[in-house]
Length: 354
Ligand code: AQP
Image (cartoon, rainbow, N blue to C red; front, side, top):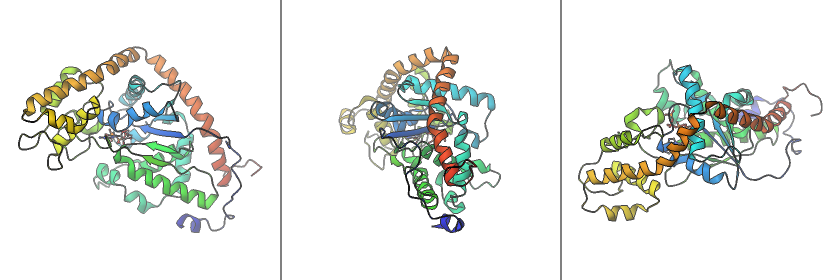
């Protein structure tokens, strides 16, 4: 264990139960989303709609990760506005702040404190292998080191809450694996402290691809032709679907050699809860134009009630701030004692009694 040798002088890992929070609890789910743009249907189909379903049976914690959104160039005024907009979007999609804890990452300083501590247990080489860093940094040496550290902050977000399961899209699998490795390493060096989380990745919706390039994933920051966002009007949705790239030929089938149609059929299937095979059968001999018109109307219809609720919520930003402040208090009820436990086991707390 690399971490263990680096800390060879500390006592053997302790096995006694942690003095904090030993009570039985429901399975806990943690998820984060960056306020790096308006929520896309990729975020929704890959993650958010599952968060809405799971909040009824699991203890759910949802975090708007604004510190992660600082890892690429951004405008401070936009960041604050996007943070509040994203909270409204999540609530409009069905996150119930009475059931789930909804809060903003920067309001709970334990996240950054734990990040530093975990960085001492995370290897440089591990971070260098993260594909998201390679994609977003594109090998540019002038890229901020926060982008390199992104997965450590994400690991801190997750394990600070003794999370059992992290519902994410496929793009986050590698980061969750790193989180598990770091948490296991920490536990083996300092004694059982963190729950080791599982990635919860559904087969359907795990990777919604960009409308303008079906070989890339749909992303908030990918440019407007790349995505459909919850802030898009019905006319924008029609225009974007109409302009979405298609494959050569005219068949409407979800085959690997038809990546564009496979993606559009997947979106159609998820929004209308219709099996892909049924859609393929319905569109035999029908042209791309008609298919796209139907798809756009299906998306508009499903998004309409969410967008109506979103407009109401956005009319009262003070209420959104109140909801988030309440979420911060509830998050800190878990994060503060957990962080004190970490401070004690790592020897940086001056409190007696450990
Ligand atoms: N295209 C996607 N298909 C399926 N799931 C997706 N997710 C994101 N894009 C897709 C899932 O949405 C959740 C929140 O993502 P995030 O905001 O934390 O970061 P991200 O994965 O980097 O999302 P974006 O939209 O691509 O943001 P930018 O452009 O800022 O990088 C995660 O669970 C993610 O898996």
